[in-house]
Image 1 (cartoon, rainbow, N blue to C red):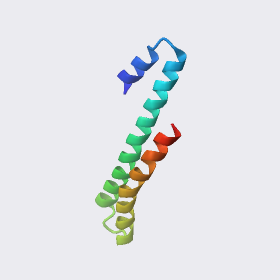
Image 2: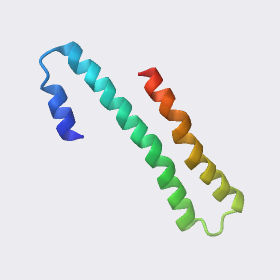
Image 3: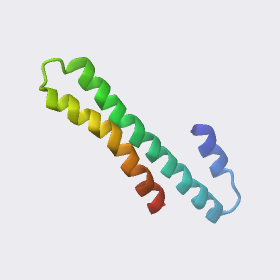
Image 4: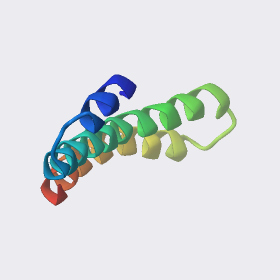
Length: 78
């Protein structure tokens, strides 16, 4: 991502930089939308042995639904 940002900042036109940078930010947000629920589910699975089963089920649903719901929203806002 640092190399991509370096290439974006090297573009001559300010409008081109802004357009490409908005695409990069949207892509980073989508990647985070996929990895944050995965990390949360992994932490609950690893350290949540004493938690109620509903917590594990809820985190599983969050892991499946959040990326699918946020992906079109993020790219639609962009």
